[in-house]
Structure formats: structure tokens, C-alpha cells
Image (cartoon, rainbow, N blue to C red; front, top):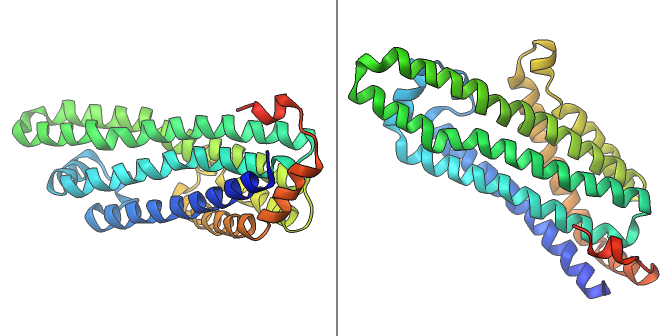
Length: 251
């Protein structure tokens, strides 16, 4: 790629990093104000469903915005990979390919978890309101959805797959020089924080999700800043290296 193209990719990736955080915290504010999210995730059906029914508009809006923040994650990392391509060695490129594939898995799992709150849970809330005698069946469906889609979204999407792609990104960045190497070390730490300790060790997930979430925000904002500051250096790397077609056209 040309120097100017790489610089544009770096700037666009940086914008997406910032945008993703803005969109997520917008969803956080809406859902937190309406239903006390994320604490509401642990409520039983008898408490959660009335909250959803009473705040249906805010719940749909908040979770839809949250879904958008999740979807943004994929192009964000694809563009980051392309922006860094000229300054990465062959091993780092392979590692960053894994970042993208694991990000696809994380986005898919998170989306599954979010979709239950957009459609299935509001339906159960309306059903419970219209037919109180359906409470045993509604409660059972509520629990099943949380055990299936909820664990897929939280355990796999928010934690395991996010931990793996963040660790891979961190390892790839440590193979670069200067500030990117420091960001790589920070990324490895963030990835370790993302691991699903709650389910694996029987600990409180809330603490780990909160710490890893804020650590990830700080790390991605720092990465966005460095992508912009180092865009000319990244662009010059593409001119210095003669990339093979397999690397320049993959993904």
C-alpha cells in the first residue's frame, strides 16, 4: 500500500477505537439509568422482566446501541492490522490474522447474548404481564435463555474470545519497536484481565468485568492516540518493505 493509504487506515482505525468506546458508554448510560445495568443481569425473572416491560423503549435503544459498539470492534481491528502491516514481521502478521478471526468469534458470541434482550426477553415480559399464570413457564424460559445466550455472550464473547484476541494483539505489538512494544505489554495485561475467572474459579464475575472493561478502554484509547501519532512512521514502513501478495490481500 502507498504511504498515504496507510496513514488514512491508521487514522480511520484510531477513530473507530474512540467511536467504539463512545458508543459503548452511551449504551452503558442508557441501560444503567433505565434498569441498573449491568447489575440487572443477575436479577431473577420476577424482578428483571417487570423492569424490562416498564422501560421497554430504553432497553431496546440501549441494547441496540450496545450491539453497534460490538459490531464496530471487527472493522476496528481489521483496519488496525492493515495499518500496522508494513511494520510487522511475518510472525506478527500471522498473529494478527488470529486477532481478526478471534474477534469475529467474540462479536458473534456477544451479539447472541445481546439479541436475547432485544427480542426474547421483552416478549417474555409482555407474556407475563398478559397472562400471570404463565409465570412458571416464563421463568423457565428466562433461565434457559440466560444459561445459553447469556453464557455465550458473557463467558465466550465478553471474556474468553476477547481475552484471546487481546492477548494475540498484545503479543504481536511486543514484536514491534518503541511505543508499540509498550502497548503490547499493556495489551497482554488487559487480555489476562479478560479471562473468565468467575466461571473458572467460582469468583464474582462483576469485579473482573469492571476492571477489565475500564482497562480495555484505557488501552484502546492509548492505541488510538499512538496510531495517529505514528501514522507517518507506519506509512513509511510500507514503502520500505516489499510485501508479498498473500499478506497484502489476505483478510
